[in-house]
Image (tube, rainbow, N blue to C red; front, side):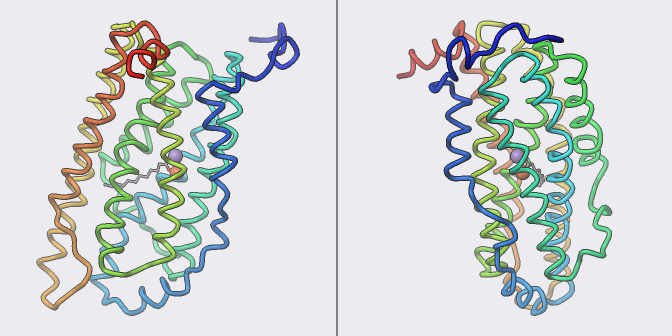
Length: 301
Ligand code: DAO
Ligand code: FE2
Ligand code: MN
């Protein structure tokens, strides 16, 4: 679109019942938190109380999240560009909150690293080839394609890597890991408070992705195949990274001979990620036989 032909709010109004508009309303109401207000003073004491090998157990996850949040902050704009270009006003309005939230997530991890004194460390050693395939390559490739191509295929692929794999599988599994490791052990209350906020924001982001893919896949087998093939391709790398984190924690456990509060059942991580993968697939699969998302909603009411 080069010129506007009309304006929705002049010829009619915002569609207040649009799912994207509802997400926008939710974000305005419940997305009000400020990373700068989180108190990390107990986290600093906790970090200092840990032995070196215990401290190291926090780093791979922190490293994956810091880069992950930075990547999604930098790579979201083409989606907004594509939705705006298509005249999808409610989607575009919702995405204004999305962009702001990813920036806050990036800020939160950076503040925590600064507070506990590890901001100077290069944590990229924890980025395996599989992590790089997703965050360094597939994510920016699929998102930036939207700048010149907003076809259904391009939108499906972008939402699949961003909302289904990075957010729906990896970030959700990561929140779970933070809670399993540190909440159970009673460490890092500030970081965990931040994780709870992030998790709420992320729920809306994933909803955006599910709805975006569902409306393009409804009644369209070719579009479904694009989603299904791409999520399966990326799952190989996501699974590989989860396995790497699991192996690290198994090695860690062998190293620590004293009684440590920091531990996690490694199989839990893998099982959680696998479950997320299956949930994402089934959410999209269920809309195939309907001609539209609205029809699915009517049928399941
Ligand atoms: O905030 O939208 C987002 C996505 C952040 C991605 C963070 C990925 C973290 C990977 C953790 C792996 C856990 C098993
Ligand atoms: Fe985020
Ligand atoms: Mn997100």
